[in-house]
Image (cartoon, rainbow over all chains, first blue to last red; front, side):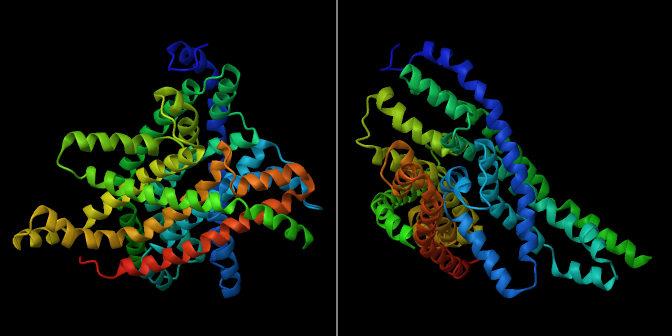
Amino acid sequence: MNNNSWSWETFADAFPIVIQGIGITLGLTIACYLFALVFGLVWTLLRRVPNKPFNWVITWIMEFIRSTPPLVQLFFLYYAWPMIPVVGVALSPFTSAVLGLGIHFSTYIGEVYRSGIDGVDKGQWEASRALNFSTRQKWTKIVLPQAIPPTIPMLGNYLIIMFKEVPLASTIGVVGILQMANDYGAQHWTYIEPLTIVAILFLILSYPSAILIKKLENRVNGNFNKKSALSTIEKRGAA
Amino acid sequence: MNAIIDIFPVLMQGITITITVLLASAFFGYLMAFIAGLCRLSNNIVLRKFTGFYVEIFRGTSLIVQLFWLFYAIPILFGIELGSNWWAGVIAIALNYGAYMSEVVRGSILSIAKGQTEAATALNMSRLQRMRLVIFPQAVRMMLPEFGNYLIQMLKATSLVSLIGMTDILYYGDILRSNDLSQAPMVYLLVLVFYFIMALPLIWLTRKMEQVSKKGVAN
């Protein structure tokens, strides 16, 4: 097989093989993302605990996870975790990837939640207290309806970012499209075509989603939920 | 404690690679960001579309794919030898983050209040003077915190160059792990701590930049 220049034959040959990895890549993206969404909530709650030293510790743990490479974190979970006495368990490559990338991105997503909650006007909290709302009502009727919509575009962006980070998992043996392409390259001694297919697949999937999220962003900027929360307060006030 | 004393010097061997890759990719990345960011604001439609294409390609695909592509495909496809895997790593990181940061450059310039441009025009400034004296000094301030964040991202991204055979910190960590599996937890923990220590000044710098950017921008 020709390995010195671009060959459409190789491209056609590699395509069906590389695309076999797409299910794993997409599945891993969704699994990591859902894990990060849920675990992000844990950070947000931990940061709201009214204790200064505790907050300081949580902030620095988040900072540590966020500013160290996810690749090393994957290696740590996959190679090092089973070696740790007492708590160590061997994890499959897929599970390591979900935990590693999920925890890494949960620190970003925790910040998104926080900025959403911080973005709710102070007067809204005061008003709901003045109207004698219970804690649950305050959160479900006033705070969250206003805090969540502005964060939706950001959360959507993180889904795309996650999709682009997932090929890292090929380094610990998760056979997504990148690993398929590398295997093909090693077998046929040509990397251009399989790697180009991977790049094209990424563009096809991530570019339209980015445009969708931009549209969503424009809609959310309309602030439609602020109105409905205000009207809840008004109704309560009138009653 | 003994383990740390054994592992530490081995990891230290990789630190030069990590730091030189970071510095070079930061330099070329910021350069790319300004070039692409300004080109996308240009009146020339060809220039605008072309840089738009570059930005979408590099933001739409994954850094690790770009790195492999540059390392394996470019030399074969165009007959260009990038010289070494060092350059492949630096170019991949610089082009990738340059594309992201060009949006920061573009956004900051666009967000400068319109009245500023109008006032500068009223004072009979040329297009270049307007950019150089009025818009740019304000826009750069707004870019600083984002630039700091991306610098931390680039530091993390340098760990990928070990995958194309460069002898950075992670590479030495992997060697240590394959020599003695039971050392793995300590090795990777130390690698993480290494990266964190390098990130600390950048975190501090980003916070400083946030303070700077709040001052001196007219609304």
